[in-house]
Amino acid sequence: MKETINILIVEDHLSFAQGMDLLLTQHPKVDRIDIATNRKDALEILSVQSIDIVILDLHFETNDYDGFIIAKKIKQLYPDIKIMILTQHAKKAHHKRLFEECKVDAYLDKKLGVEETFYAIDQVMNDEKYIDESIKEMLEIEGFMNISDREKEVLELLCQGFIHKQIADKLFIVHKTVEVHVRNLRQKFDVKNSAELCAKYAKYKNANRDNIDDTTSPFQE
Image (cartoon, rainbow, N blue to C red; front, top):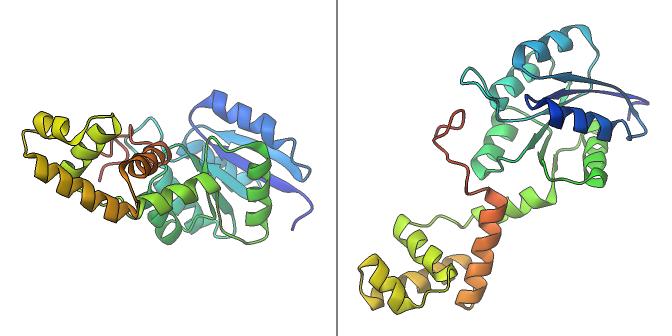
């Protein structure tokens, strides 16, 4: 690993970027930190500064570009620069696109602690790919979350504490259909009962940030 590390933070929420700056200065090998709040500034800094790692958000308050576009451009221009994605938009589809298409080096949750952030920096500087534990968990859970809209409706109500008959009444379907959906969901989740099913679904929602709308720019499907 190099004796010193220069980092560029690309994040349009300046207060978060400044907080990250203060955190990263505690790393014993970090020598210089620059901040860019948009694509233009990021590329300008890269053209004049020697940067080892770009810490990049995915979501920017513009329809002109996002983190995927920036990552691809940086790798095209500076293939040796390490790119660490730091985001709250953790999605399995994003993971595949980031590593296979954009060639990033790390995928990190914004909730990550200092110790693991520093460990991730060390790993990528040693030419290792890194995914933090919370995102790994999300990827594992989402892998079998291929459920239909009706199954999701049943699951949501089940996790709210409604019994099968109540779910049937709310969805205007027969009781036996609810039982079939719940049985299929248990098989998909590989769980023994409804309590385990709801516990796994809660983890999925928390890890996958279900409140993020996939149709919201710049994350259109």
